[in-house]
Image 1 (cartoon, one colour):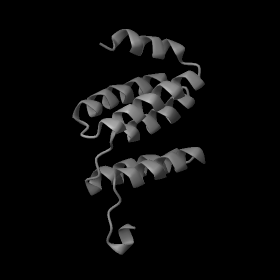
Image 2: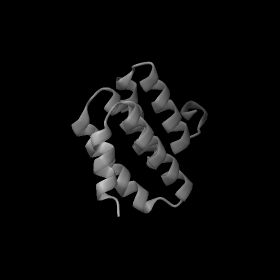
Image 3: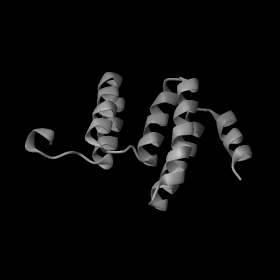
Image 4: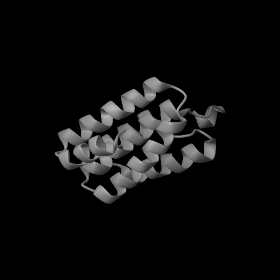
Length: 112
Protein backbone atom coordinates (compact mmCIF):
# COMPACT_ATOMS: atom_id res chain seq x y z
CA UNK A 1 0.00 0.00 0.00
CA UNK A 2 2.73 2.44 0.96
CA UNK A 3 4.63 1.70 -2.26
CA UNK A 4 1.56 2.83 -4.17
CA UNK A 5 1.39 6.11 -2.24
CA UNK A 6 -1.34 5.05 0.19
CA UNK A 7 -1.00 5.22 3.94
CA UNK A 8 -3.00 2.49 5.69
CA UNK A 9 -5.48 3.54 8.38
CA UNK A 10 -5.95 2.14 11.89
CA UNK A 11 -8.30 -0.59 10.63
CA UNK A 12 -5.74 -1.87 8.12
CA UNK A 13 -2.93 -1.81 10.68
CA UNK A 14 -5.07 -3.54 13.32
CA UNK A 15 -5.93 -6.30 10.84
CA UNK A 16 -2.26 -6.76 9.94
CA UNK A 17 -1.21 -6.75 13.60
CA UNK A 18 -3.76 -9.44 14.41
CA UNK A 19 -2.65 -11.53 11.44
CA UNK A 20 1.05 -11.34 12.27
CA UNK A 21 0.36 -12.25 15.88
CA UNK A 22 -1.67 -15.25 14.68
CA UNK A 23 1.33 -16.60 12.80
CA UNK A 24 3.65 -15.82 15.73
CA UNK A 25 5.60 -12.98 14.13
CA UNK A 26 5.70 -10.51 17.01
CA UNK A 27 8.76 -8.77 15.52
CA UNK A 28 6.71 -7.61 12.55
CA UNK A 29 3.95 -6.51 14.93
CA UNK A 30 6.35 -4.12 16.66
CA UNK A 31 7.54 -2.80 13.29
CA UNK A 32 3.91 -2.25 12.25
CA UNK A 33 3.16 -0.35 15.47
CA UNK A 34 6.15 1.93 14.86
CA UNK A 35 5.18 2.39 11.22
CA UNK A 36 1.60 3.11 12.23
CA UNK A 37 2.69 5.98 14.46
CA UNK A 38 5.11 7.31 11.83
CA UNK A 39 2.30 7.35 9.25
CA UNK A 40 0.03 9.27 11.59
CA UNK A 41 -2.44 6.40 11.91
CA UNK A 42 -3.42 6.55 15.59
CA UNK A 43 -4.06 3.16 17.24
CA UNK A 44 -7.74 3.01 18.21
CA UNK A 45 -9.31 1.11 21.09
CA UNK A 46 -9.79 -1.96 18.93
CA UNK A 47 -6.07 -1.92 18.07
CA UNK A 48 -5.22 -1.95 21.78
CA UNK A 49 -7.69 -4.75 22.49
CA UNK A 50 -6.07 -6.89 19.78
CA UNK A 51 -2.61 -6.20 21.22
CA UNK A 52 -3.85 -7.05 24.72
CA UNK A 53 -5.23 -10.37 23.50
CA UNK A 54 -1.90 -11.57 22.22
CA UNK A 55 0.12 -10.16 25.10
CA UNK A 56 -2.03 -11.99 27.65
CA UNK A 57 -1.89 -15.12 25.52
CA UNK A 58 1.89 -14.98 25.95
CA UNK A 59 1.25 -14.57 29.71
CA UNK A 60 2.96 -11.16 29.81
CA UNK A 61 0.65 -9.75 32.48
CA UNK A 62 2.66 -6.61 33.24
CA UNK A 63 2.76 -5.48 29.60
CA UNK A 64 -0.90 -6.44 29.28
CA UNK A 65 -1.80 -4.17 32.18
CA UNK A 66 0.25 -1.37 30.63
CA UNK A 67 -1.67 -1.79 27.38
CA UNK A 68 -4.97 -1.81 29.29
CA UNK A 69 -4.07 1.60 30.74
CA UNK A 70 -3.45 2.83 27.20
CA UNK A 71 -6.76 1.31 26.14
CA UNK A 72 -8.66 3.15 28.90
CA UNK A 73 -7.00 6.44 27.90
CA UNK A 74 -7.80 5.85 24.23
CA UNK A 75 -11.41 4.96 25.04
CA UNK A 76 -11.85 8.37 26.72
CA UNK A 77 -10.89 10.11 23.47
CA UNK A 78 -12.59 7.72 21.04
CA UNK A 79 -15.15 9.42 18.80
CA UNK A 80 -16.91 6.21 17.80
CA UNK A 81 -18.63 4.57 20.80
CA UNK A 82 -19.10 1.34 18.83
CA UNK A 83 -15.30 0.94 18.75
CA UNK A 84 -15.18 1.20 22.53
CA UNK A 85 -17.97 -1.33 22.89
CA UNK A 86 -16.24 -3.77 20.55
CA UNK A 87 -12.86 -3.25 22.24
CA UNK A 88 -14.30 -3.77 25.72
CA UNK A 89 -16.19 -6.90 24.65
CA UNK A 90 -13.03 -8.27 23.01
CA UNK A 91 -10.99 -7.50 26.11
CA UNK A 92 -13.36 -9.32 28.47
CA UNK A 93 -13.68 -12.25 26.05
CA UNK A 94 -9.89 -12.62 25.67
CA UNK A 95 -9.25 -12.38 29.39
CA UNK A 96 -11.87 -15.03 30.14
CA UNK A 97 -10.65 -17.35 27.38
CA UNK A 98 -7.10 -17.13 28.69
CA UNK A 99 -8.17 -17.70 32.30
CA UNK A 100 -7.42 -14.22 33.63
CA UNK A 101 -10.59 -14.00 35.69
CA UNK A 102 -8.83 -11.98 38.39
CA UNK A 103 -8.24 -9.25 35.78
CA UNK A 104 -11.92 -9.33 34.79
CA UNK A 105 -12.96 -8.98 38.44
CA UNK A 106 -10.46 -6.16 38.93
CA UNK A 107 -11.92 -4.32 35.93
CA UNK A 108 -15.45 -4.85 37.26
CA UNK A 109 -14.49 -3.46 40.67
CA UNK A 110 -12.75 -0.39 39.22
CA UNK A 111 -15.39 0.47 36.61
CA UNK A 112 -17.81 3.15 37.80
